[in-house]
Image (cartoon, rainbow, N blue to C red; front, side):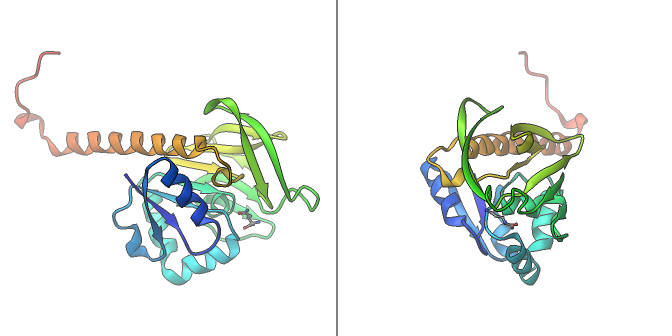
Amino acid sequence: MKVGILAVQGDFEAHAATLARVGVEHVFVRTPRDLEDVDAVILPGGESTTQWKFLVEEGLEESLREFGVRGGPMFGTCAGAILLARDVRNPKQQSLGLADISVIRNAYGRQLASEVRHGFTAISAEPIEMVFIRAPIIECVGRDVEVLAKSEGKPVLIQQGPLLIATFHPELTSSTTVHEYFLRMARHHLAKERVSSNSVAQPAVSAGPVEPR
Ligand code: GLN
């Protein structure tokens, strides 16, 4: 498995370090060509306005959207969450629009702009450390969105099919729980894809004798 990490701005190095800790190969994505042989993509935290400007300049906006529309696994943290959202406010901003969520940027106010919380999630028995840095609030989620964790009453970790979104920064902690969850999701998704493309490729008439089970 090879993971592409969007590396136009933000804390992409921290995601690379986390993947290295769990022994997964990565490439930094700066042009559409860098996406050619990756199995999954991570969109890091940073400044979403700046990231979006680079995406448009490099034509990455289209290739990332295509990757997502084809069902490629994607994981966005903080600014990455904003890039994936269907609707972005405060101020209104363009995005990839792949995840059925509506987000409000920098919504925690000045005092609460950055803080560390510990919270339970649906992905592990232990609470995890959640580092929030000028995080967006997920205001609304669509019907296909599964909320995996809430904090202060708002979703902070969500999944929609092969998309995983955190408004906090698991890459800035020593825990690899969220990344490992994403990698499991991605592997599961890729295995399913393989099965379905095999079954399309084999017409029923050429199927050999049925193996006893
Ligand atoms: N405040 C940033 C934005 O709106 C996101 C901050 C982050 O990624 N830590 O783009």
